[in-house]
Length: 90
Ligand code: FES
Image 1 (cartoon, rainbow, N blue to C red):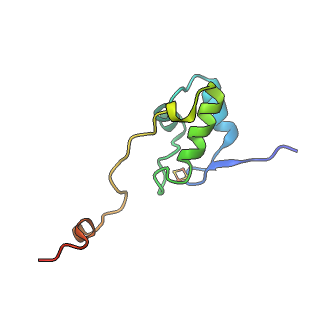
Image 2: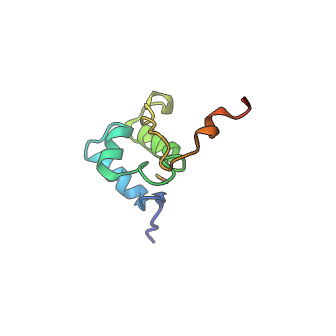
């Protein structure tokens, strides 16, 4: 039985799709992001990032810490400016 293991729930990307991209030559988190859109969903990769990083490290045969995480982007939703200044009152 072939199970469909979803790695990135936001973009509905399976483990097999990630592995195919790596076999096709992707060697970094940024490349996987560009090819598959993993990490570009509403959670911005907070859910799938570590799983994809571990898969990439395993497939490349390198330690996980040697795989550079993808670059962080500003929050997807606007947040009130006050959220950045908690605890400071004037
Ligand atoms: S689970 Fe991958 S971007 Fe949210």
